[in-house]
Image (cartoon, rainbow, N blue to C red; front, side, top):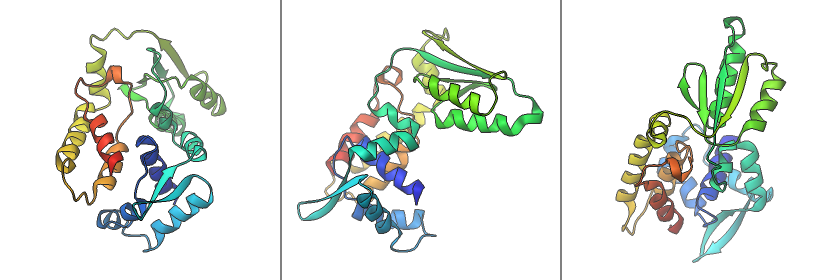
Length: 234
């Protein structure tokens, strides 16, 4: 249940407080197939529990039940999903780089560090080198201290990575071309159509792949903005 509640909060937050018809979305055929192992009332229970916890509001719009994220929901999202902080935070123009050399004998810690870096939005530049444009220095320092990796890993903060075009580097490391294509196909599929069955759930699964990089690192024509507007109007 926890995983799907995160998806709900992420979609609502990314829609910039626009209300989303989650009763329709959560009970759609697409979601039924995607989560076929869950019972029929699974999605309704999630929404009800989130309303009770004050994470989302249930309102009536045009005679239909809709949901929107609350301030408490935003706080929970940022705590549970570190990438959510990117939705409202402006880039300071700096890069963070983590370099580590962890012996094979402690490979469990090494793999855990890699997972932590990915969870925080880092991309793998080289085998033991990860980079991100976002300020996560405190989180990394706390993690390295907690797992006793302070002598095996270091984080650098730099104003410039001399790799040529930073946009091209970002495109390669975060696979922006593939994500942008999915956004483009999403817009072309649903824009101008009266019936938008399956739109919200398709948007959600693209969102899960989006690294939410600052606009300075995105392609000139980034279809994510158009997709967000389209999803928010539904």
